[in-house]
Length: 92
Image (tube, rainbow, N blue to C red; front, side, top):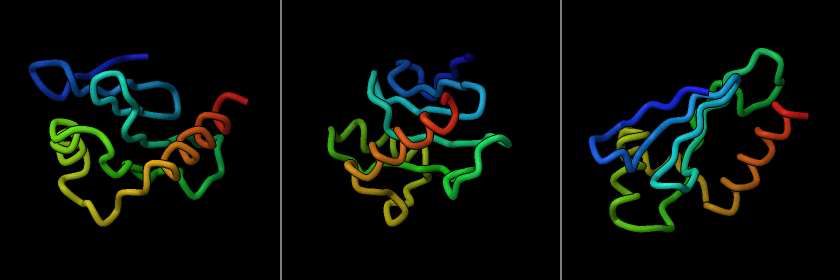
């Protein structure tokens, strides 16, 4: 695993794991990008971003991640389900 920081305060980071990149605002996963040849999923190759249910700062982080494509963000409950499904597909 490798970590990249997207801002100077280190409150927005990406964990680069084999097959999946996970975006964190502070300590909370807010987006992921599944990229694994061994996983057959409609999520593969797609950046999945949660709608903002947190703070204004996290909203700014989401905009940094997806360029402000609010229409493509998924409801947070759905995001959690998709995130868990992606991790299960990778690590089972």
